[in-house]
Image (cartoon, rainbow, N blue to C red; front, side):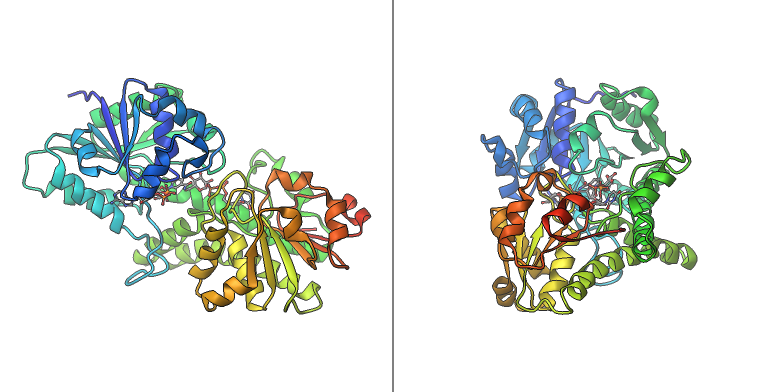
Amino acid sequence: MAFTIKKICCIGAGYVGGPTMSVIAQQCPDIQITLVDMNTERIAAWNNPDLDQLPIYEPGLSDIVAEARDRNLFFSTDVEKAIEEADMIFISVNTPTKNYGKGKGMAADLKYIELCARQIADVATSDKIVVEKSTLPVRTAAALKSILHNTGSSVNFHILSNPEFLAEGTAVQDLLNPDRVLIGGENKEAIQALVDIYAGWVDKDRILTTNLWSSELSKLTANAFLAQRVSSINSISELCEKTGADVQEVAKAIGMDTRIGSKFLKASVGFGGSCFQKDILNLVYIARSYNLQEVADYWEQVILMNDHQKQRFADNIIQTLFNTVNGKKIAILGWAFKKDTNDTRESAAIYVADHLLNEQADIHVYDPKVPAEKVFVDLEYLNSRPDAETRRLASVSEDPYEACKDAHAIAILTEWDEFKTYDWARIKRSMKSPSFIFDGRKLLERAQLEELGFVYYAIGE
Ligand SMILES: NC(=O)c1ccc[n+]([C@@H]2O[C@H](COP(=O)([O-])OP(=O)(O)OC[C@H]3O[C@@H](n4cnc5c(N)ncnc54)[C@H](O)[C@@H]3O)[C@@H](O)[C@H]2O)c1
Ligand SMILES: O=c1ccn([C@@H]2O[C@H](COP(=O)(O)OP(=O)(O)O[C@H]3O[C@H](CO)[C@@H](O)[C@H](O)[C@H]3O)[C@@H](O)[C@H]2O)c(=O)[nH]1
């Protein structure tokens, strides 16, 4: 039996649900989409007439929301109503690393997923296609199936896995022109119903269908491979610093080998974001749960290398500043985990700053998109010291020149384009001497800065 999809509900209006559903609504004006979330503030922000106040910053997103909102795209806190009315339900809730109990610090916490499944099971009175959009451990669909099919009602549920591969900062472009769309499932008609939606704007050759488990595992694997490239080049950056090789030159030289490819070879202060670490830890946990110790150790090293990269960046600042940063003002440019997003989850900046705060440095943060309070909350979450001390040592500036004034050093931790356009001569004049720059993104030009009198350190040089 072919399915006709007229109404979609998406549970979870976050970094994935928001942009994904906005693009589907834009591309498929005949489908009515309701994004629901239990976070009332988030939903209110999605409904804010002022498009600058949307809860998520992504280039191009506000135009799409402006086009589709209140036409066929709706944001609501009425989860039950949206579930009841929908033909297809996307689950796009967060699946963070568990911070309690069995698997603490490793496994994905599936409590939000289970809650969604139970809510769907309780509310649904007609057949539904349930789509896993969240990133999930392989075989989660089996648990979902068990919850949905044990309701005692005659409602049929078809479960699909449709992991999302968008990267933040380029979410809209990634959704409009995906390298591939992956759909795993068991029921051919249900799979076809989702294929038909994407086929509205995605080339059919790029829509891949697989079994459920391959789809679930492909998502974890893709992130593990991407993160592994960053850790691999970061490991080489340290060797470059010892030997006189330049990591950018090495990356270019190896990236021109078509078997290696040039993407994801940018050495950095360490990868951040809500996905890489969480998903690799989860992969490691799954491997260990099948007693595959070598597999687990292999992937765990990607995380250990990343931790080392953040740590050694902070250590290098301390060492270079004559082995003490106590009472010294250090400007941190960039708090988001990458440019063009306001997301700070697992940002390397948090860990570098925390390390410097442990040494009693006086931290001044500037980021073009991250609100001040978020910076404090991120630091306080680590619980490294009393909150009052964090707020005494750290501050947030709305102006980059203020952040850098009287600083002993500047650490560049996000690759925001605007940092390249600053009046660096003015910044130099306002700083203490010697004036150090620690470029964790290799964003600036060494020759220009050295000419201005800075002492310039960059990852991998
Ligand atoms: N952020 C990314 O770039 C990205 C990309 C691909 C995949 N993913 C995966 O997508 C999933 C979602 O990630 P995200 O970044 O959008 O998370 P997020 O935290 O931004 O959004 C999740 C939302 O779900 C809501 N929620 C949780 N449980 C709920 C429930 N029972 N009912 C209603 N709302 C509920 C939360 O309030 C939150 O607003 C995760 O599994 C993540 O790994 C994320
Ligand atoms: O050469 C590189 C590439 C990335 N990074 C860093 O790696 C992190 C992650 O970057 P990126 O992958 O671009 O952003 P995410 O939004 O985390 O996207 C990843 O995680 C998502 C969530 O699962 C997936 O959907 C995407 O495909 C995957 O790229 C950031 O801190 C980047 O600065 C580097 O340091 N060097």
